Length: 153
Image (tube, rainbow, N blue to C red; front, side, top):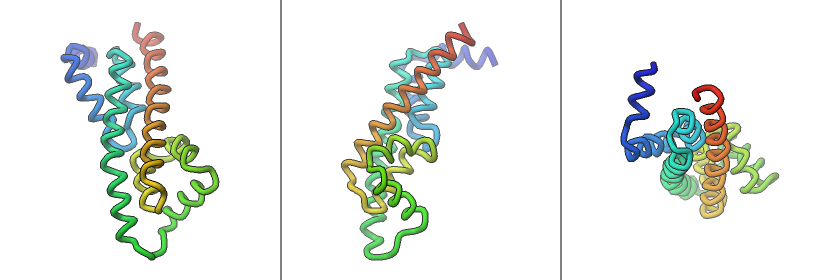
């Protein structure tokens, strides 16, 4: 295990960043796991956070237009139970609160997809989910820095 960790640490910085972007792109891993793992493994915390957020934003760039496409094809049809549940919560709390709290339940990109597919504003949904990726990524990266100092130094 130590050899594998050393191999990751010895990778060029560009490959470390690419790994963070890939992890950030994957739903349910996203910026928070990329930032946490990067910081925990001893990568520069700013690089780990930035790479995770970039990956998460790339996922949002894919998810939001797909949600809009679903919304346009749905036409006047009824929403699914899950879509109605998300829409009810969003109407209750607003896009900012829904976007910032959604990572406690599901992936940021999946949240954005469902919100846009349900008919919410694409731009506001995109930008508030970017903010969620930054906030959650920063918190997890900070925790990763702490864990690295406590357990690995």
